[in-house]
Image 1 (tube, rainbow, N blue to C red):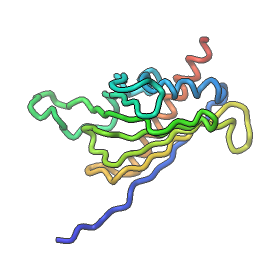
Image 2 (cartoon, one colour):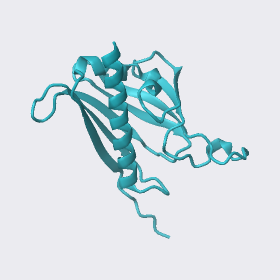
Image 3 (cartoon, rainbow, N blue to C red):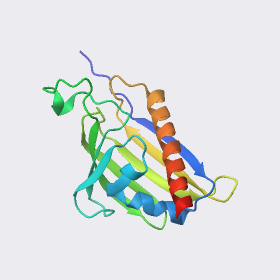
Image 4 (cartoon, one colour):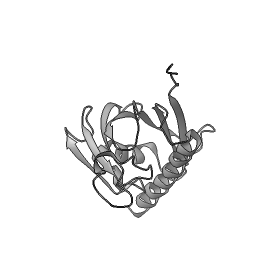
Length: 171
């Protein structure tokens, strides 16, 4: 039997925040251990290794919209195990407002997952506000359709941006 190598899935989603600046949004991303405050389907996120916001630190995230593949919970008879991942911050560039992280372990079927988030001013037409760009690369995920995965990222990023702007408006 011949094994056919599939290329990695690579995607990019972005959303514009018309009422927030890069300097307001960037600190929310560098608080790596508290991402659940912003990402709508993330029930829990906390640090399990290292210093928050420093390369090499690892966070544990659970309860997001990507279904688990059973993982370690096979003996549990609940209808749907909680999705979880352990994610390591691999690079952070405060001047470019960019950070990269990788999934080091999960029960969602992601292999070789790397993501980069970048916050840029305004947008292509130099409007006020800022734009969050989220790039990801992952080996194809069994039981998942690439376009559906991109759509989950789009919806999650848009809702996250709304939550961030709403919170900034209350400060």
